[in-house]
Length: 98
Length: 331
Image (cartoon, rainbow over all chains, first blue to last red; front, side, top):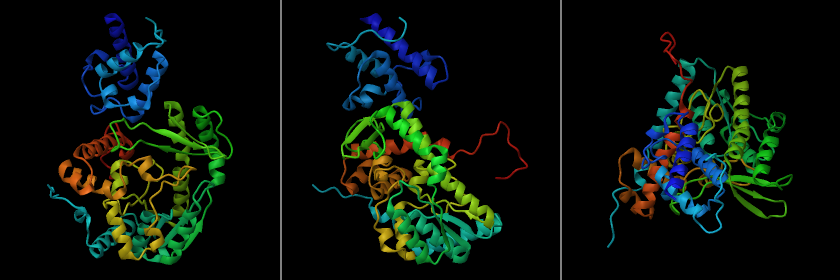
């Protein structure tokens, strides 16, 4: 499970770095840094990030789950996606190469 | 226990006569002396802002030197043209009606917009109407993510969260409307050797509620320093017809009726004004909350949204960026 979460975090970091930081080193992003208040992601960026998560991890993000608690930092996103994937009936395969 | 508020809507009261004198002097200076133009072109939407700008320009350069343009398209509310004409006639301004539907059709505005809509709602087609909305910032903790609301011809309403590609296409296609109107304004400005007046109030200007090179383009912006509440005060002082002053602010951009509040701002304009004033003057959320009947947490969310919009729309205000300054040219 630990390895799975680390892989999930790597994929998220790579996506964020590639799309919002023009490929800069994703490891420089702190896991607790606010992505929205820190100016990494704007409102369109949030829509893109949610779309990536839904299509890549085959989960459905419900409206009531679109909160800063779930999406404001890399740590919170990893925690949220991890909890969705752990739900009974969740699809565990995803699009990225493992 | 009653908590006394240290801030109220009174902070937005202005001396209308003095404000009008200041603005008309500035418009004279900018249009006549700085730009050496013969008059002003202003697009009238039937709303409060463009009505006040037209009245101010008429005072500044003379009503015969202000051309009012009414630029409806097939999805405009019927009110817009009617009220625009009411204002032009009330102010005694020459006006022209230029329906921009055929230009928008030729550019593919409606077709591209509808294709983006079908990517979200496959059954979207002729007879459907739509708009873009945001969740309320004060209602809960949710992130402000755009949704599309579409109504089928038989009245069934669908609400779908946008996808990135569909949203960007929807906005890009819809922006043809504001950019086409500005193109028409500059056509008339060029042929008459006039300046173009932009009509944003402070709330719109500060929060980036405009289309770059669309309604954001202008030579002068006479009310960009005034809160919307203050624009209403000027409207009353300038004798703008009551029908205009009592009309709710709309975007008049999407085919379903849409208020500015549900599309962009978090609160009704007067409450937004007070929050923006408070942010600008370092007034605490607790004080504003008492005045607005909200909780401090809700007002903090509005403050955060104001700052987020400033960051997100800084690009809209930015002039083209040069690699090195060209010192001989003064903007």
